[in-house]
Image (cartoon, rainbow, N blue to C red):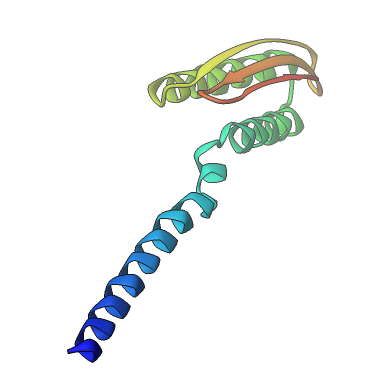
Length: 115
């Protein structure tokens, strides 16, 4: 009879230790996906890269201004649809001289860029 209680006590003790370790393990886990949820930096670098490409491919200041305006309006509509705040202003004085200010704001991050 004593051997049976020893086995039952050992099983209960093992189960309780396993439960406690599982509870503490959940507190020590790292959430690596939180980095992927904040993509404001990727969005801003893509916008800046496209603006530089538009500036490089422009033929005159009027064309540059129209292309940049169209691109930024399309980008603003797309970002607002995804829940981001997007503000911009720009000026084009010559075919390859573009000055702009961008602000992209998400839930956790705000990025301001000035060229």
